[in-house]
Length: 592
Image (cartoon, rainbow, N blue to C red):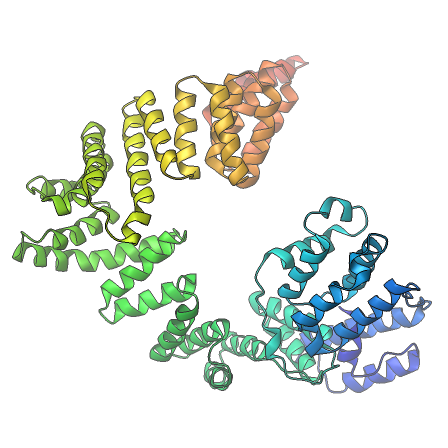
């Protein structure tokens, strides 16, 4: 518990007098029944015990500011932090950080370190202020140097604030200029965590503490409304969120919570309007988008729902929930689209709507049978070959798929790109076509052709998936070091890209680079522990070098991750046999 929260819970001023602490505890205890409010009692007891410990400690003198210009400047910083309006004033902070003391080579380092020491205990600044500090003092560039002077968790917090957008809107605070906003924020974040963990009693106690600060903020009311939903007080929660959103209708996070509360209270129309308001500000916000699509499906607006779901996939939200929703909406659209197309078969745009639904629902067999009788005109040629090629690929007719992808590429080349948006879309279109061509060639074991196509895709745009196709083709061609080099490029773009780590481990194994095989095994395991092959390669390396205890350690890790592998079972037997020192041990291995 934060020291300031201790006195907030005890409802008394900070003191070193034990008797005053005990009196405050007894007074609060008289209003706190452990049976009715166990979480409140627990927090009261915790505050009481911590207050007594503080009273028993020898008070350390406050760290004095240094003498001279740096000390005078830090006093200005302290003053700015102590008032809400100046704490949030970007112009004021820019002016502070442009003073001579921050620029002069003799004082700049002392000023930076003095500022960070102050901010270790006074860190509740909006991200935009942290970014100004970073711009002036190059904090991100100097992290290695700062790591020798400041705690790692504090520097991680600084990194997050300097590189991420601010979630919490400080400007919505209502309270006195010099109120204790730091304590309020500590309580609020603890309350939000309690809500997310489902600990409603603790959340309610913290909400009560927030009320004692004289500060209000709509986010605290929203979290409390969500807690009321958990306590099945849904109508009370709905009324509270109506008050909140009436005062602050533009905030997307508040509207998201309001939508969840209204949905829980059975007000689906109101919830839909809230989620739409979120999407006006954040068009691909995951849960509001998914909830709006579900609402639209219920109301027979399948095409609107489909657009939202495809937008989520395009934004990288290719989750199982989204896939299931797309499958459901396609199941409703397919009969409708087929009926429309059969009534107007010359209209290929109607067929393409049907075709993409069939592809997404993995009914490629129907797609092929419908498309083989269609002869596209020039205007529809590119989409026709793209779709038919994908159908053939899913049906494992890779030679036919390759033929269609080549025709798709030719159709793109022949299409006139007239508008600016059409011209901007060309690299992505060519890249996707070449990538699918590479995939179809790989499945036919034409690795040279796959390498060529992947290279053409990369000429269009840099993409980790295209690099991965190139690395895989190089591996299949036995060009292992070149494959490693490409994997290194991918991991430079994204150090957690699993396919590149898996391929590089295979490359290292083929190159007899034992330590690198083991190193990549641990990196792969950290990301996704359920793949058998990385365990097998690492265990095999140890077996080659007769490090049988290490083989068994790899096997043990596989068992912990519930990885099933006959090859690992065999290596375990061999390792145990090699380590058997007595006849009984050897006979036990033979039984296995």
